[in-house]
Amino acid sequence: MKIMKFGGTSVGSAERMGAVSQLLPTQEPVIVVLSAMSGTTNSLVQIGQQLAQGDVAQAESLTSNLEQHYHKVVAELYKQEASVQKGKQVIETSFSEIREQFASSFTAVSEKIILAQGELLSTQLFQIFQEEKGTPSVLLPALEFMRITEDEEPDQAYIRENIQQQLAKYPNTQLFITQGYICRNARNQVDNLKRGGSDYSASLIGAAVKASEIQIWTDIDGMHNNDPRVVKNTYPIAELSFDEAAELAYFGAKILHPSSILPAQQHNIPVRLLNTMQPEAQGTTISSKKSGNQIKAVAAKDGIIAIKIKSSRMLLAYGFLRSVFEVFERFRTPIDMITTSEVAVSLTIDNATYLPEITEALQRFGQVEIDTELTIVCVVGDFMEDKPRAALRVVQSLREIPLRMISYGGSKNNISFLVNTTHKEAALIAINEGVFLEREGTNA
Image (tube, rainbow, N blue to C red; front, side, top):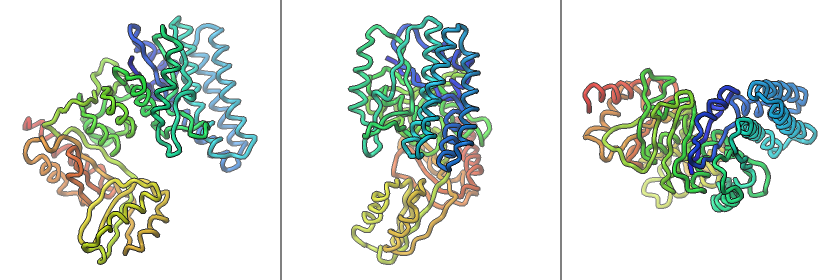
């Protein structure tokens, strides 16, 4: 069985839904995982924001505009009146659910219910389209098998057991359609896997059914070696290892959700990144295969905060770092980079939610300095097996860029640099010229 996940732009219009339908295989079972149509989640977020502010009139205006948009989609998508009526019923049900949240006090649960409607709409409309075409299909409601734990981690045993129960009901069906992103939590409330979570859904589903392959279809022809929004003449990478892809996704490559590699990696399921606008393109294949012998790509992660704890008491102090890490564990804030010296430790985080509390807790260890508006630039490859001087080539390319921190050796797959965000674009261009273009010119 194959998993095919399509992002918001891939199903962003009636025309795009038709194109997606042409990509589905006919000779093997497939589970299609859909995001909300492009723009929908942003509109739903805005509706929630207005309700949180108590502006029901503005929320209703935004809701009506979105509802009208979906009626236009239905009119364009279907040719048969019966399908149009089914589509209108889907719209009525989802928008009634949204408006039900207007009548009561707005809570986090209300917000999650509203946000879920995007994926519920896209999948139901797409399934009606398949029905009109005469293609047998089954809609698998994600809310019946996708669940997260109290710690907001996927409950993989529950997912595996319940999706297999759902699939067993339809032994002769080849095409299944389900929602990405949405799930239930441990209290059985509607919840989600956060923005970009449809990739994560696809990987979790692939692991649960032991899929032969997980395909992630977007509007880009694979993972590029650099940010095409900043650097000219980037190119897609044909092959990446799971570890390399995970590093790139975590450190800013927008094409892939950072968490989506692990479930596939655990079950050794290849992941392919493909382009719905250019389906003939090779894209990127992510697998356990070690390709080695070159620097693969660079990614950048904005919104980084640097924290320095300086203390003479740190010198040879047993357990000092453990105590520092316990502060971040207490406030559920991951650390990205860390460097230490005899009298100071510097580290970075990308979540400022608990920054005041973290700062206060760290001040008992010494002087605390906070810097914001920083970016981590991460260069990924197989450095332990690369040709000599690979790391040197990367560092030399950044000789004109002020570097705040360097992390090398924590992973054989990356070197990370902390720079001011104002220097991000210059750093990406410098690495492109000093590493990728130089390599092309020397065939190194």
